[in-house]
Image (spheres, rainbow, N blue to C red):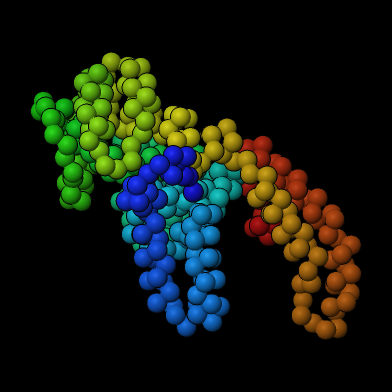
Length: 329
């Protein structure tokens, strides 16, 4: 969990607001009361120690409700990182998935994760409302990161963009409702002039004005200027895709590695090999008459099987998309 190096100079209220301590303390107490019989047998002190350790390590968002995983920037960052860790192998295998399949994966980690947010992330990748098309893991996850982590910023920029397209002057910061966001998202994908976009310099000025008064997280204005100064006109989804590809923005969020390292995770690979080795030497039958013989066979076969698995992992890391028999999975 990221901490401000100048936190000791902050007032009490500023520190609590920056770290969201009260949100986590309230959730910890609520969880304790809801599962009192389960937790109190291990001791209340131990429970709080384990709760805040999980918050620090970022694994506290697993299987939690959507309202919780989005309540703080740290929770959002942790959820994006958890999604990457859990399903990185999809990208390593070179699989292409549809929006509905990515939605299903997200709902494995958060049962009530809204499909609408996944659709919006897919639109960033596809630049249009063609959510049935297939997407690579790397394209989707960086777009999803922008849509999820900067959700309020994306919604407000969408309002600005639509105002500029319609010839209005967006002089005030608009906080969209859920209904207006759906209408804006639909309009952005259906707007006939969306490919031509709006004037980049005016769009940049409007976004800078938004950031000066914005209370939620937003990308650095340096990155925003760098993107918008690279062309005279820009579309809404083109702007979001540029944010998704910007390494500086990705580093500021801190949830994902750079794209070149996205599919590399030595610790996870070592853990997979360890699990494979355990499976290779474990007996495959409960029959007492053949257990000893099978155990000996497993021990003899395990080095060869482990070597086969290691070769397969190496092939996947090289980007191979060759299909394998289901019995090898």
